[in-house]
Image (cartoon, rainbow, N blue to C red; front, side, top):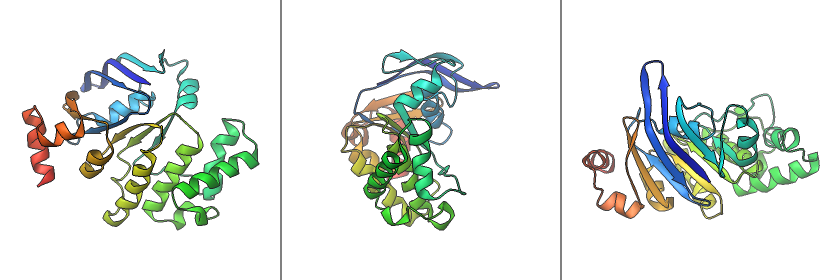
Length: 240
């Protein structure tokens, strides 16, 4: 579904991604972990050209993403859930959820609203359809953001540290929704610091540091006997 081939990204003189190559299979749940500043978020943002690689190639469903076709391909194939919820504050939850299906995917208002109520039910917030985002907790807003991504009916959902802006007590409610989603046939790429989630949900874990992929493997391999010393140091700090 997603293929990165020798992707490099510079911000000015800063070399943020260094020859990153990665493939994500259809339906796979890929979790990317690593220290802050390792290039995790930039990797995910290159997958949908929110950041355009300085060099290298990105393929979605076998088609190379280019500056020209990015809008169409991304719209047809993927959604993204951000750290900050990026909801429109002046619109109700229902409006936030139906905007893209009506405007971009040409659904009727009835179809879009049926879809919105279905996914509000999935994230456990049907009763908030007519609330405004500012009336909701951070955890609720992030669950709405996930429902919005689902309303696009994308085959791929990218999550960029979806719990990092949340209070500790609301993190679990968002993770619970994501754990339920992981049982569906959606391709998920998740950048996160939540190791319990990675262990429970990932088909494969990728560890990044200094703009490179240092190790990848099953959660079992990763958390019980990683090969790379840098991974062992990182897990030692995080898991104790």
